[in-house]
Length: 187
Image (cartoon, helix red, strand yellow):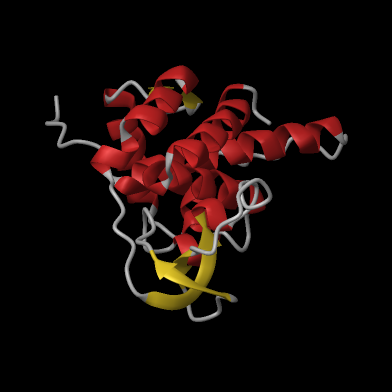
């Protein structure tokens, strides 16, 4: 058996992509538009701007950590994943806000939390085409500012995860409820 060297930030993104794709697939099925294969490693890799090998390795790490129960079907252990996000991610992948930069809003500066929080402090993922000026925070993976433009549900999930990574108790509480709804109840 291969040695497990721990989770990597892209593993969280891959699982969040599976969750966001699952909800999109069910919406397509509900609208009688056919059953398209959204969850292939190739499609995930393309949408996240990663290699297929990165996706495969990520799935294996997540399965070893019991966050995914089957890499072929990409069945997520949703309760374990939610527990990891709510209680572990801020320690494993911490954030330290940086300089003021132009970028894409995240954490409490982005939907769905920005409607519930009034704050002059803005957090962004640095991006040349961003339309918000705020404190830079490091995204979980370098392609995040590019990929969220194409996937609004993934963008919301990543912004909520950043709330957990950066937020105070009130922000954490709101984000935790939103994440629980999206992860356990699939929106």
